[in-house]
Image 1 (cartoon, rainbow, N blue to C red):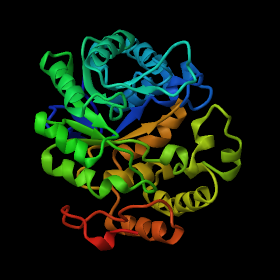
Image 2: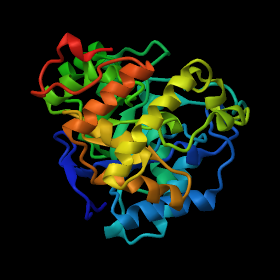
Image 3: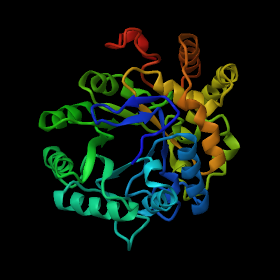
Length: 351
């Protein structure tokens, strides 16, 4: 895999990989037909989006086995097959969510059994068409009774065996993160983080910053709400097979607050000559300890609208304007602004 890029990069913790400030997320590329899909998606558009992102300089893709029940990984493989080996991006994927092909609409199971994780890895390697996965992450804490120490040790073993380059946790809390670190270093954490969903900034991100753990945040645009193109009409028109149609942030009263916050991003985007979506991602990247942000796109055109975040640097005035807008709209919960010294968060940072 290549890390060549013209965009600024940051070290991904202690993994030895330097990544661009944004990476392409492939959740929606899994399409519909499963429990947490985004509605219909054209595979050719997905491949074009991946190719455009890499051609423009994005050097990592984040996917998961469960996205589309394997389909997203297969789409990533199709895109990689069209690239020269030295031009391919880093590929990050996840384990720990399993499913039954006979019941595709059932919610995936949270599985931590070592034998399952090993099978999942082999399946991901085959679907992706790679010999080694650059970053392998436990998608959620196990729900099958497997202790964290057991599944985390399995990931550490896979890294030691050379099947994966780095290992990380997604959607784990601080106590779980500390528990894993006691066994072996957590290379990365992937929490949800946006100007609406800000909880990770209170404890997880500062901890990672102190312990050399890279942080790649997901949903920096809150699944479309902070793109500047979402609307009440679009929310009402979401198809039944789009998970957002059932989510509290996309229904009243939350959506009114969230769209008001997105509107407050517009003058900042205009000042920087970029998009609202880029400002939303740039806000997450302004926090000390955040290495990169995952941005989802369904087409090459959407990729073009997001690339500004790869080099955008929001200044103190921008961050203060956003903090004021969060307070004014009442959107979300959590810290309003990064600590000035990059250290512990004082109490007055919270809404």
